[in-house]
Image (cartoon, rainbow, N blue to C red; front, side):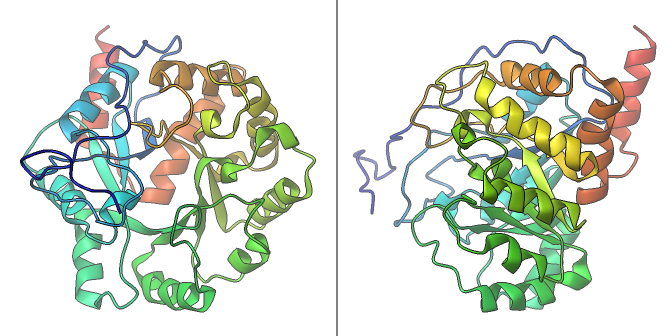
Length: 320
């Protein structure tokens, strides 16, 4: 448990926030690009953190994140419920609900964390707001997950067209691929499976992930190269073979995410513009592949339509 350290009772952050001056990506992003993995936080006096959390982040508002998205060239984004809020999705719900009246020029979707006994009416409310999946944490404290319960949850969300998103280190969770393959809903694996890049793409655990993706019901997020690399700063060269192995096997099952605002790192906070540049390096600047992974794949996975913001971006592009 983390104690409150301010006189007001509001907890003081114990991790750094995102950098204030991210670079502009060298390559323009295609219209309708989606950042498929980010978190927002605070204000802490309105959205209290779980007393059993493992870190306390500084505020990271949706407005600040939207400013970053415009800077990088994204028009779509997926907000992922972070572990510090547990199953209290209040901030996520408010952010998705407010998006109807606060015109940031971004289309939003969400990934929630729910109690095992969540009601059908709550699931339906979340669905109407734009939630498209449930995240399960198999990495941080409290991650001893009952897979029978996971299968029950999967059956409940199947009718909504949702997926299960897994925060997992595939080298530390026994029989992960076999367990995931029998689920009745699609699965999404965060941060390239948290697979330590130094082990290389021929490692049996990574080959098992590739086989799982080839089955056609699992997606992988090309996110967090800094989390799997042995390097502290970009370029994260040892992560490139991992990303490219995924690209070679199943480009139709990949999405990209910045992982903003980059919580709980033991390395320096990365530059989001540099992370986008790394993605384009992985695909050798292939514009068709960029369109597939940044636009088409997340449109299918998260149910994005021909959003007004995308049409406006296209119009602005034609006027340049």
